[in-house]
Length: 166
Image (cartoon, rainbow, N blue to C red):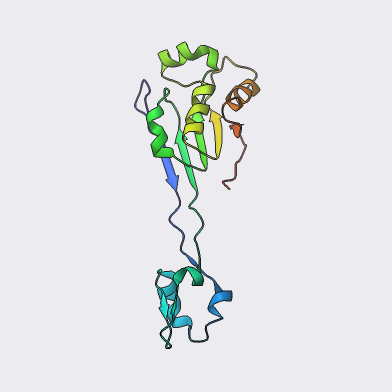
């Protein structure tokens, strides 16, 4: 990130989820028992006493994608962060100014609504949450409206408001 004073951004990602046993399919093979479950979860195929190999993909359900949250506050427009936050479920990005004040955003090392939305779009995130608004604005809905011109799934951070990562 780039600001007048030292600042950090964060990417929080859940630990990889384990494969789940596909019990309906496992029950089709009487020879497979609980002692085999750890090997199956570890990705191993099972060879039956008949010599038949049962593919791991038949015995497991793929894990769900780990959820992720990217936090980028107090920063000027930095397209270089896109590969780092690629495919995050939620991106919180500062939008101190509306787009017509890009000059002031650049001067003070902050971002505009459209710059934040552009980062979200290019990073292919699921949802953008805007925050860190300049006190000069009274109608924060202008921030949401402007960002949604570029990135539809945009919300405003407000005191007490919560978001669910899906």
